[in-house]
Amino acid sequence: MTVRSVVVGVDHKHPDLARRAASLVQSLGGSLIELVCVWVDETAVSDSRGFTVSVDPDIAVSSDAYGADVLAGLNRAMADVGLPWSALRGAGDPAAELGRVADEVEAAMIVVGARRSGLRGWTTNIVGGTVAGRLIHNQPRPVVVLPGTGSAS
Image 1 (cartoon, rainbow, N blue to C red):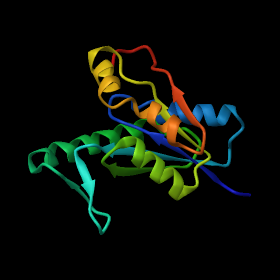
Image 2: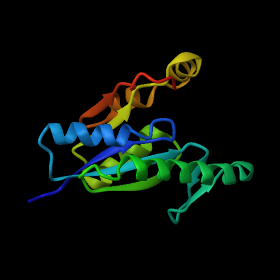
Image 3: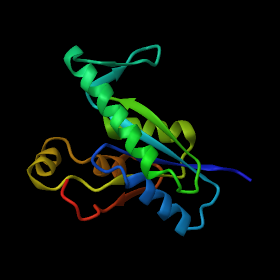
């Protein structure tokens, strides 16, 4: 039997997204699925050796703490989910990085959360488009956008 991967874009504001993606996969009968949770640090780039380095040394410390916060939230949310999962840290453009990881693991699909609400979400959409929107237009695989849970973002 072949285990397929599902790439899930995660951040600290929506630690339950990976768990909700696992529920979706399980409801579709996907017991042979591994979730690859990817947090993308937009303040960093990957160098030629594959190391992730911050483009601003002042942000590096807060970025590492932010990454630890994301991983801690994932560990709590995924503790009893019943599917194998892993966590990766990416760098740069979230849509490009999620697509790269999905290609690398030959993912069956990519799961992301809906855009932020409010002014920040609106300005993100105006300036560069949403991650979900860019993925939908550039991916050869399905992209699933899970709505928010009703809490403020």
